[in-house]
Image 1 (cartoon, rainbow, N blue to C red):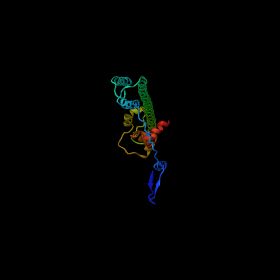
Image 2 (tube, rainbow, N blue to C red; image 1 turned 180 degrees about the vertical axis):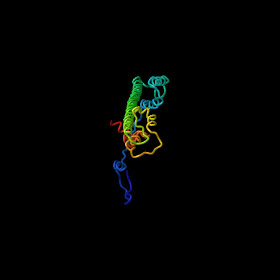
Image 3 (cartoon, helix red, strand yellow; image 1 turned 90 degrees about the vertical axis):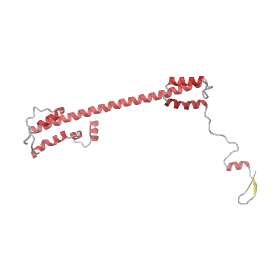
Image 4 (tube, rainbow, N blue to C red; image 1 turned 60 degrees about the horizontal axis):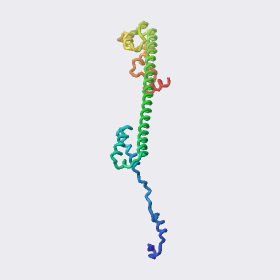
Length: 214
């Protein structure tokens, strides 16, 4: 094989193997792509059938029908091929079921924990309200402030009755005085719409953390 040098314009003989090294090619090229077999394509088809929701029995019936009708990729399948298709599809369904069961158990556990946390939080708030109502009634009993009920023995410290209790402890028609400072801080916690104020906290996040740690 001859070629002409681009600079000297001389014609020289070139070894065929040298030329192949320059182009990084050999005189025989082989395809590195492995052709998928018919069985491989049926394995891939299982993905679509699985997404359509076919259970194992439905899939077996599907394959049996295709084999009986001698459809293209199913024609010529032997018993080992069919068993392999059934086994693979069955294992996929089993994995999916295990995943759902695990997620279901986790969701049940999470719901149980959430419910337990809510019950604990509700009980802690109830107990704290009762404690503060009792402290408020005791403090007001010894107060010298005008317009404040000091005979508080008959009043309930039950938080469920707080709406009625707070109506009974004031006679009304007066401003807060210096003497009121002993009980007014407690009262403000009880009438606050934010339950975290009961615990001298500043947000619901802090309250949740407090409940979680106690």
